[in-house]
Every structure is written in C-alpha cells, then in structure tokens.
Image (cartoon, rainbow, N blue to C red):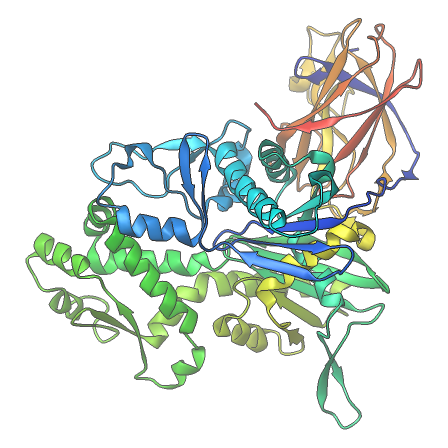
Length: 596
C-alpha cells in the first residue's frame, strides 16, 4: 500500500501506544542574547552567566550595509523616510513597517518564497514593489546579531560566537508555519540553529514575573499588597503587543517551574488597530482620494500626521471622558489642508462643520481637536475583542478558579485598556508589573538559561499526516475511494496530536507505523497538516491546512513494504520528529520544512 506526500510517500500501518520522555542536551552557554522582534518596537538584551545581569537596548540610531541595500532600521528608518521621501529616487529603495504581522495575517499562504509588499506607494509608480519576506526578516535579525557582536568586541572580555545562545520571541498564537519561518530567517541571518531557541512571549513574561512581586495579596486588615506568586497559583497572561494580543493561562508548579493549562488564544487586536481606526477616520474627514494622493506625493506629510496621532494616543487618558467638553489635539501638517481644499474648493474647517463630525471635530489653524468620546472609539475594536475573548475564556469550567490577570507587553500601559479590564472583570485581581513592556525581553533571557522552566504545554492545534488506507464501507464516502490504487482512500488525516491535549516537555507521543511508497527510497517526506478541529477525518476537511513537510534521510535505502515508525515531540516551540527504520533500528531526526 502507498501513502501520500510529495516525492517520498508513506502510509500508516498500525500505531503503537508508547510514550517516552527526553530532554535536549545541556549547552554550557556563557551568554544568552534575547531578541524581541516586535511589530512596532524591537530590542535585544543579553546576560552573561557569571553576573546574571541583563543588559538591554532598543533599536534607535543604527544603520548598516546589507548586501547591495543600505538598511536603516527602527527609528532611524522612520526618520530617514521622513527627511528624504520627496528628494530621493525610491525605485531602488524599499520601506517596510509592521511587517511582522504578515506571519499572522497571511499564515495560510506563507512559504519560504513569500513576498513582502512595501508599506507605501510613493510617486507615480504603478504598484508597490516587493521583496522576499525571508530576506527582510533575516536582515533585521542580522542587524541585531551584528549590533551585539560589535558591542562585545569593544568589551575587555572575549566570548566566542559558539558560546552564545540566541533566543527570539514569537507570539504564542503563531502557528508552526510562522515559527518555522522565523527559525529559517534566523539561520539566513547567520544564527546557528543549534544555538537558537524560539520563546513564546506570554511564557517568558511569566518567567520574568515569577522573579518579581506581582500577585495581589489581602492582608489581615483588608488592605491589598503585592507579593510573589506561590506554587499552585493560576493566572491569565494578557500580552498586549503592537500587532497581536496573546492570551495564555499558566499555573505555578514549582520554585522555578510553570505549566500551560489552556492553549494560547488571541488575535490581531494590538496597538496598531487604534492607528488603523484613525486611518479610517482620516478617510471619512478628508476623502480617500486626498489620503491616497498625499501618501503618494507627500509621504513625509502623511507619516508626520500619523506620528502626531501616535503622540496624542500615548497621552490619551480615559479619565478625560469625565469632562464632556474635553478634546484631544492632533496637529495637521499644512499639506493635508492644502490638498483637501484644492480638491474640494472648500475650507476644511467648513467641510467638517457640515459633516457627520459636526460638534465632535473642530479644525483650528493646523490643529484637529477631537472630542474625547470620539477619540475613545479608536480603541473600541481592540478593547471589545480582548474583553470578549477573556470572558469566553473565564467561563470555561476548568478555569473558573482563575482570578488573576497579569498584563504585559508594549501596549499594556494604556489607561483605556486597563480601565476596560477593571470594568469588565470586576472579580479579577489585575496586575501590571513594573516596566511591563520589558517583561518579555527580560524573561526571554532567563528562558535562554532555563528552558526547562516550562514543564508542559497545551496543544493549540490537532496535528497529523496525510495518508492512504483501505476503504471502509459505511465510514468512507465512495467519492473518497481511489479506484486506480487498489481501492484505497486518499487524503486520510492520521492524527498525532489533538487540540487541547497536554504534552509534557520533551515527551514523544505514540509511534505510528508507515510503509514507503517505492523501493530503495533514500528519503521520505510526510505532508504535515494542522486544524483546530479535534477529530478531522480527511486533510481536505474544512479548516485543515498543510503547514509544511517532515523530511527524513534514510540509511542506505529500504526495500518495498518495509515499515518505519514515526514519533513526534510537539511540546516545544517547534516540532521534533524521529523516524525509526524497523529492519535495522536506525533512528533519524527529521526537519520540518516550509512549503516551497
């Protein structure tokens, strides 16, 4: 019988119920470098084993050569764009922002050849230029790597690159495909895979917060104080980033250990959704034609307005809503007013007076004064989705005893968010640790030294292999029967893990036996599928998607109908898989590969 796959195909014969636990070999790492690759802000931190002190740096002023492209990164990239948008030839330049979100928003189409479209279309170009996403992500990681190595070169103590362990943080709601893409980008950036760990952002935030007083404790006199979380404590981690919202549920299991007790959830509800709402507001006020024209012809003015809004957003406090006449001020670059009045032959302030925003928006000189109750609506999409997700989570029977919410991340200090949490979760102790935006970065460094801190995880997806098996009357529809291949059924989902299943760290699950499709195969390739359904029957079922392949090289080829055993360890941030050849007992660790 033959199975399904790409070039090398396999089929399940019979599963074996056999669990075993392994641990990755310890590395004597002298230094850990953590990179927090954020949607809106990024930074890195490192820690030397001998002093255990974390050194951190955000990306501010830094530029470097990157092959034929001169790369500006972070704040310098934004400033360079502001100052040169109308004076240089952008046919050979690319401007990307918030591109990390591609790995979440376009995960179904993600491959190693996926293109990244530049963020704005400047001038009279027919379309936006594209660049390989892998190249862009690798360039950013290479930037951090070289920044760290240059800093280390200036210090008196000498550490070889082989003594460095690298940790890159990723959202917990990312699927395996997105994580693999980041791993491959790190490899492209020159970071050795055997010195790399991917860390889930809510987990490393938990690790950091285990070291500092964050939980709420009620004293005998009824007053509340902050204390360290104790063994048995359960809590929800809300990681509010710039792009995504990550929500995880953890339990403290030991002095320095914790486990996940519910799979990660969340969505695209980060800080940039507030900016997206403001952008839609601009279209309502100025008109889409004017906004598009400014983006193309006056990009510096376009980004200046967005920058001005960002400054106002940071300072916005919901307490201002108590004053019914309160307004928030956003400074408008003069080009916006000029372009509007040229296109509409009417003053902007007069147009606003006659619009749906009458009484809520007022134009005074170069300032747009927005009533605070209107400004607050820019936050609605993120707040409403976060609250709905949290309410759905806490209503689950197994989580009814969870009463602490730990809020971290770059956008966790928003008064609007915190007020909404207090209002909608009145029975929860809501804790925001000191410097919540750095909790992930600091925790990632600790994770680099102590990855065994996480003792178990809950599967976010059901994983399986595409295979063929004999047709079963009454179970399989006749449309699935392949009349050309001995009546086998195509596209069967051979389940290896189930959504919601708890897997111990380092645990390999039960083996599944397969038979190679052809004689003398030197390698096998399994198509690997994921779904949020617990019991899919076929890989063609709704919600199932092929997220990559597991590739194994075999020892000297195999004869037809010789079985092999496949086992996977899904407990880490990436899949580990091993094939055992039954005729000689030879074991081979496989590689999870993105689709071409």
